[in-house]
Image 1 (spheres, rainbow, N blue to C red):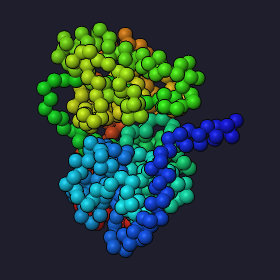
Image 2: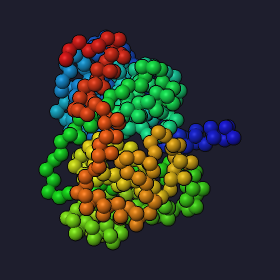
Image 3: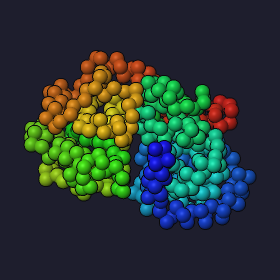
Amino acid sequence: MNIKKSFLKIRDKLCYLKVRDMLSLVLFPIALPYAGYLKMAERNIWLVCERRMEARDNGYVFFKYIADNIRLINVYYAIDERSNDYNKLYNYGKKILSFGSIRHIAYYMACDALVTSVKNSGPNDLLGFLVRKFHLKKNKIFFIQHGITINNVDHFHYNRTGFRAITCGAYPEYKFVSEHFGYPKDGVIFIGGQCRYDYLHNVDNYLQRYILIMPTWRKWLKHGSPYLKEVEHTYTFTETRYYKNWAGLIRNDYLIYTAKKNNLKFIFYLHPMMESYIDTFRSENSNVIIANKKDYDIQSLIRNASMLVTDYSSVFFDFIYMKKPIIFFQFDVDDFRKFHYSQGYFQYDDNPFSNTVYCIKEVNEKLKDAIQHEFSVNDEYLEEHKKYFPLYDTKNSERTFREIYKRIYLKAFPFR
């Protein structure tokens, strides 16, 4: 049975390899002498990245903090030049590396710290996997995540990552990861928030309120997954429970009526792993928007939303941090636990922030209640907020920097 599982995992990984992943192995030996030169020519090299095409999460905020405030660190950011986010980084000039280039590979191998918000942080998937597998960046990779970890995610465990450290934003998360993920004692860092949370304390001046609908992904719905038929009893995405429930929610008459009556908009935003399905979702009402990452900045959407509707996505912690209401819509909870992530420390159906609902009618009822209360939260919510985020300020990027610096150079950063 274990042999079969191992074979399936290898098969799944090979399905996602691209030609450029194989070509990178040719560039790697070419970049090594350049990396050796960089080690002699530059001091304190830090490399930061997110997904190949993105600069919009914790990595981006962390890079900006160092580049704008810490002169002692030579910090670089890797991104694909074709990305819609590239222009946000243009003014940083040579600090920006073209993702997957020889220069990127050289800085990747030469840096004192590789700080990433995604697990596979290499110039491409294959090279990143091999570097971690053979410990070529041992004790130099710092995982600042792209969300709060809720579940017992085995591929974040120390024996699967080898990360020097993982940062945690919420205190219960910190305790859970410390106890279950197998990191050394100083390999789990409590920050008190995430880098991007520094920007959640202020909102923009929007003319119209909106509710963000933001479901997470499903492993069995990835293209090429061998589990689709087993879980959904179909090979057609539009026949899955995921599609039927989320498409049904954004098209249901009550939601459209609620939007018009209360001068609200609903913005539906898919997880990046599900974005290939975005064209299957339709809205014929101007108050229900199907948003894509090309035209909408997700951090702005989160920061300015009045409320969140999600399923299991850890983005709900952003809303807890901002003290805003949440709805958990979980129509496939048993299969999610069996085929996606096992249960973690957070009980969706028993917590002070919100409770689980299982059908569109129940979502509508929760929406009605939240709107009637002007999107306010109760005292029990606010008290629990203090337990999750005892450090509620705009210094998450600073604390992250100081903790990483201390672990690289074995001393505290010398300046305030």
